[in-house]
Image (cartoon, rainbow over the protein chains, first blue to last red):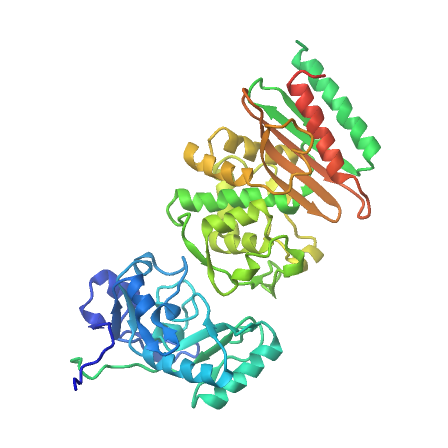
Length: 198
Length: 283
């Protein structure tokens, strides 16, 4: 039996990318969070050669890669075309969302700009966890739009009960709160696949 | 052939009569015929609440982005129903039951193309599409675009739509009939950025689905690229009228009413019909 991974995407050391990509992705760079603490951005990425591949790349039984990389015109133009690069920790987020999906018993929809977005994305600031590929904004679960206090708090509780150490944004309108989606993240997790040389 | 001055005087009297008989609090009309250079300006420098006619200047702002390459017609925008008031940046939403278009609301959480949102902003007057586009383009850029095109005189854009807090504070966008006329004339003459982009904007305005105003009493075969605007005390229609075998004319009708009054569309349609008669010598 082969011990090779069947995962279709290759791993890339961000520091070996062209200057244009390094400028957009800032691999391994330090970035201050909202409290001024320095956080290190991911260095290793999966290379996504095409949208077709993103549609096929199965991260878990119910999540495909494309769901995590939908970004709008606010993303830097270079990263709207292919190849694209996604932090390797995206697989950990997918596993957590799969577990969450089992707990809620319905489809979990990640919003545009609500999966991975680069540090150059116009909405990325204060070391946003979305730039680590470990945060998801969920706008709908099954037929329920998460745009009320009750729906957000209900599914937030489910997420926290189901996923150890997950953090969910409290309901509300000030910065750091959310009132039209459920934000959950795993903290500043990075993933270094075992075969890479670091 | 009746002299242009005679036709202008006749049309002015007809508008005065419609104004007095309709019960409108105020009516303003601006006409420019690109075929004959006929012009009429009836209270055309009076300021009105813009209502949804402000979406035409916002369309110009969007196409300024396209002209400068910061946007593409197929650029995708995240459909999110959360905006910030111009008053202290208080968050607000566009209520779906106050929006004429449901397909944009149905896309919340997903993405829509700039060209789709522009179509919905004009054709069905989607308020959600309008605020999404204005968020991407920026209020300042719309204002700058109008200045650069020489169309800022008579257009005072202060915010997006459905910003109730701003409305309560008396902050709203205003237009004059002459202001809208200048904008539409730029489009009709292909002078907004380029003939090709002007044509694309006109195509969007041709998609207008609310046709009880300017087009209602025009002959079959007439095409009107226009934008309506209606709130409790306001009913406007502003457009470019294309009749067969002649150059188009621009017509702007702005009206103000008591909140419980009726007959708004009828008055606009009547003025449009009279303008058509004046310009085609059927007076």
